[in-house]
Image 1 (cartoon, rainbow, N blue to C red):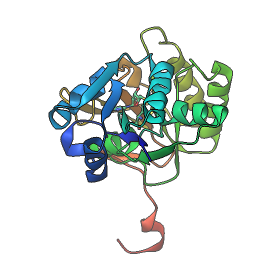
Image 2: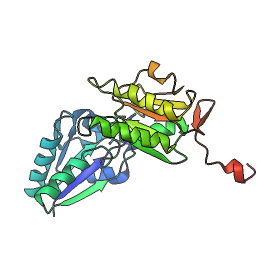
Image 3: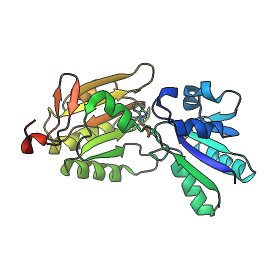
Image 4: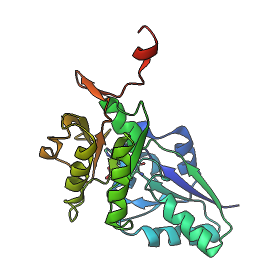
Length: 247
Ligand code: SAH
């Protein structure tokens, strides 16, 4: 039976791909995805039929991939990070379920930005955390704000995916204001841009100051909880071993 592989390529290029992802790319007749992510893995898909496009073509890409699979081809759709975390797997599953297609779909997990960006910051996610996407294209702003409030009051470490876009620059300011209701201004905030890619940067700032840094659509913003602290260039969210053991 032909396969539809939903591949997470991780944050960067070949070194962050899993062996499983490489095997499934090799097993594919056609590779589809946003051109920027296809480019990152261009070395290992030489000779394959490639259909790349813009980031806004998601619905068309999913439908085309499904029709290729129905006509007997093995197809990979690549997403950066993990395909099932704000990636292409979402739209594919919604279409398949809605139209009751019976096709063989496999999700190949990849290293999501929480893991890759987190690794550059130290151990910010060592206690309970949540991710919130600030993209308001498909989620209304009032729901996003409600979730930020809940994360703040629950004292979760918060990873903000899609913190800004070219058109959307105000929501991150509102997110900061809400977090300041629950946390001190000196709470550590990590700003990781292009983790594991050229021009990678990781900065640790504070809730008061982090908006003074460059934050764009290739950035993950990580807001510490009330116990998160910094040591040297690291952000540490304790699990509180110190309360119970001699460390
Ligand atoms: N499927 C992806 C997320 C797609 S949403 C994943 O699992 O990582 C796109 C957002 O992810 C970006 O706006 C940014 O917030 C974050 N992101 C993805 N790759 C990143 C990287 N290499 N460095 C920093 N942030 C990244």
